[in-house]
Amino acid sequence: MRDYMKDTDRYGKVWIWSAVIVILCVPAAACIYYNAWPEATAVLKGLLGVAPIFWTVGVIEVITYTPMLGVGGTYLAFVTGNLTSLKAPSALTAMENAGVKPGSEEGEVISTIAIATSSIVTTLVLAAGVGVLTLITPILNSEVMKPAFDNILPALFGGLAVVYVSKNWKLAMAPLIFMVVLFLLVPSLAGSVGVLVPVGVIIALAAARVMYKKGMV
Amino acid sequence: MEFNANSPFLYLVAVGVIVFVLAQSLFFLVRAYRRGKQLGIAPDKLKKTILSTTVFTIAPAISILVGVVTLSKFLGIPLPWIRMSVIGAITYELPAATSTANALGISLSEMITDPKVYTAIAWVMTLGILPSIILPPLLMKKIRGGMLKLQNKDAKWSDLFMTSMFLGMISAFLGMVFADIRNGLAGWIPIFVLLVSALLMAVCGLLIKKCNMKWLETYAMAISMVGAMAFAIVITPVIL
Image 1 (cartoon, each protein chain N blue to C red):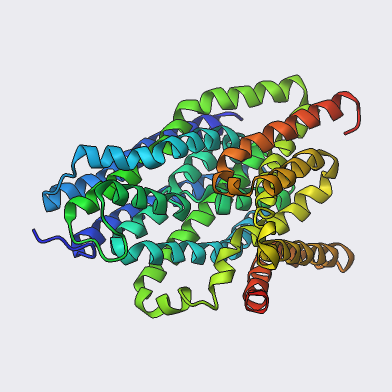
Image 2: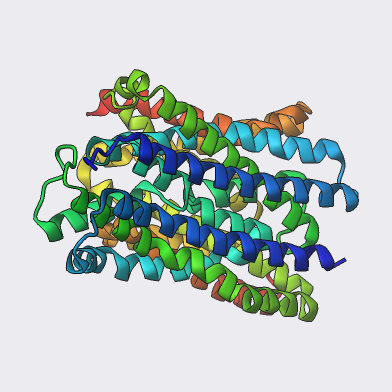
């Protein structure tokens, strides 16, 4: 039964290492074609501005999302990106609707199907959008539409919260109260929410462990 | 070769990358679908997963397209198109471009014409995100092993463990919505949007359970999300 998982891991590794080569080829191709290699110091200085925070978030995301998304889902989601705003919610919702548990092989299958579908749809929407970009840019950039895109995370997490928090309100209380208070006290943290995900996870786990030991959940 | 951020060559590179991403996604989709059938999951359920995810993905995908539009003002279309189709997210790409531009002392208010600036930004975007793609294959065995051990040792705690992880993640994002509350009524907009999304989801849940509208399950997430986004469009000009 575990052969599917083993194969998924093997194929996943082949695909993800190929993806590493493909994404490195993009800047390399531009450099070679235009014979324009940038100054190493410029790249290093640019990296210095973003790498410390994004490398940290990268490590955190891998550790947090891998158990939720399963093997195939993880290999695919980390290549196609937009994890928090799209891939993780779609995998979680799909598993919830299908009544399968993350970590089981059924969960693995449903999560992979959701992430693959989501990646394909996103890629196709982007390709179609790029094709008619001059036509739709005024609409996408309009002041009228701006609030919709500015509020995509609350619009997404409100619905998700109802599904998960209502079913597990005891487990949700501690991390939820902590996070709301934290953001009320230190609003500037909103920019580094990626780093706070594991903080929320640790608080949720600690509270769950205590309640489990006391037989409250 | 004269540089142009929208050159046919760069479009060609973009198409190559996009074909790769589609191929990988299709490969995993087909394998998982076949395995699902073998495991005895009803084909209807598998199809429903695909349909519901498709509907749910469209609104976020359009917001990702907005990211392409933002970046295309100075990077042209092909590079943002590539970055947003593979591992990218606007929350990362924009700071990466800005950081490089600052290092080079240039402005991003107009289209980049210097190929060296362009390639410097492309490298920073690529190298800055690399750990996210290199780490999963390196850490997979350890993480999977840990999860299996947990499942075998104490199945109930393992379930609670997973659920708590989701809740921890969701909590961080729910908390973030409250960050702007001190900016007056405008800071409340995200909270109102969150509440409308939650309300729509609750109504969908009631209809599914009480009125036996099972079909709604497929669209509930998309309805609450798009509904709340539409509400944001209506309420923002009223408040501001």
